[in-house]
Length: 100
Image (cartoon, rainbow, N blue to C red):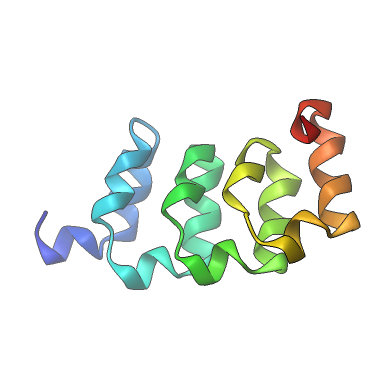
């Protein structure tokens, strides 16, 4: 992908609906941008997989994601997040299978 396309949030957000794997080619700046990644996740929950590690270890980001959808739970692998009662509760409210 050209650098221009890798940095074009509108194009990438439109494409994510069809295939979240397009985010593999998104710029690092977009993959670490909280609002962009939240919007991508709203279109395809698997988009969280491509979020920058700093976002995937951020309890605030995890909370916002899990309020939308419980399925990205597996992408938040830090102990701090996995043992945070508030975040666990948010995920469980969406689906009990999260704990399995």
